[in-house]
Length: 165
Image (cartoon, rainbow, N blue to C red; front, side, top):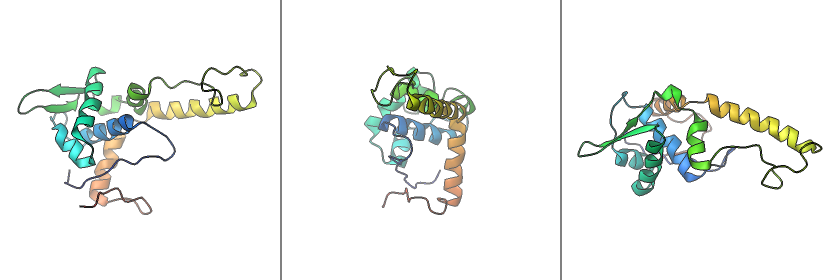
């Protein structure tokens, strides 16, 4: 990949913690490498402008969960531990956010009015669609989007993600 730096977007339709966002971006970056190629963590953190100490904690969690493999030593770094097509966005997000549940949006816990609440049913249906999408969207597709961005630049109307040099 080129030396351009991209800052992961914050906000938008899904509110994720920085850890989840950085994990998704970091895994997407690894997808752009040859299978089994070991990548220095500093290369990933520099590319996105993320502190390497923060990215190290994120990648340690990904390694504990078996999504990446860590390599020690002078040629150490990280590589995907499984095929990118087998790693879903839901798996990554749940490492950092915990399991996504159908809790009540008003009480921030189990819904006490579920049988009679007109809101719960609609939101539960929307959340189920959201979870299904997260379960189908893989890290492989994110890597493809990174490759396309590198080759073609941002799509028309997209926010500029490059940091100013």
